[in-house]
View 1 (tube, rainbow, N blue to C red):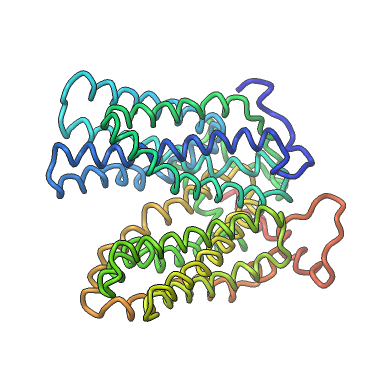
View 2 (cartoon, rainbow, N blue to C red; view 1 turned 90 degrees about the vertical axis):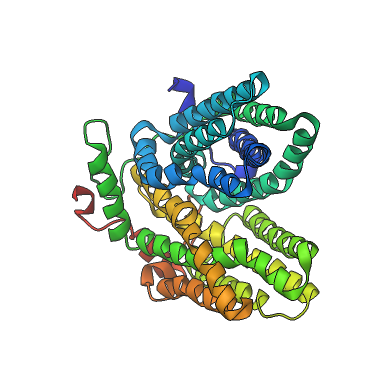
Length: 447
């Protein structure tokens, strides 16, 4: 790592910091590359394989990603998230451009796409924990919520712009052109990441060194990270709460909407309107976090929006008319956007910096590894009982995450960091003190 890569996070709003905007541009390019890559992979597979094998190709990358995600967190903490993110995007660039060259020079068949998907999944397992661990090293603690809002806006931009752009390139030049564009997008992010400055690793607030470094075993570091999550009074409950919410809501949002619109006769157009409404609401929630910068009583607000957002997902499954479903999806997206951004900001502000990669890997595993296991169960349940009851039951499961937060004093009282020298809100000083004392109990870092 170069000497110019390390500097203290500046005391300025995240949206006015050129270093933050540089990182955000790199992240945007990477997200767009992801979207174009997945579209190109699916259509390339569809040209050489039947539908069942296309599904296997698309799912191939999920296996190493889920299996290696926790190890990716160890790598991020051991070698530094900036190095891992730069290396991951460089490898993804080389991998995808290599696939484009292979497709241009020959017709290697399905095996090439399977190999690309598997290798991409391995690199993703390193990239996701590392990129999630970077925000606290780029901005001051009081700017974490704003940066999470900006990051969520970037993700929404990628999901809105990436697929149409990839489809256009695919139509003009085929899979070779689409893979080339994806590789060039990853290449664009690398120099931006190289010039992004990050803050030095602060000392643990507990006063004890974290067991992270090349002198300790990777397995020991992984176990230590899991133990840290389990014992932390704030991080542990928030991670479990988020996992329960994901398990409850990922089925309705990713599978249920298709089944619901078919059952109601709303068709693909209705599906598009509902998803667009949810996406617009989530983007509005991210924009709100970006503009506000900080929300008082963040833990209580996170719990409330989790309850209300889960209820909204359940309500979508029982409303009788498409316009009403779109309106509910819009409000639900807004609530979920606020809930997700607050949850991430609270976890990252409370986590010891040396554990950020491993904590992020646990959160990513629940979202991208465990939650998709609910897809077949949700589909089977809809086939047995219909969409409405299953949507409501899934919403109830999501609400258990809110119930866990409600029963956890550290979550109820949690506050986001204030700008240095700012006075606490009236009546919130005790809650803030309680949240600030939530880093792990004495001796937990020793295992």
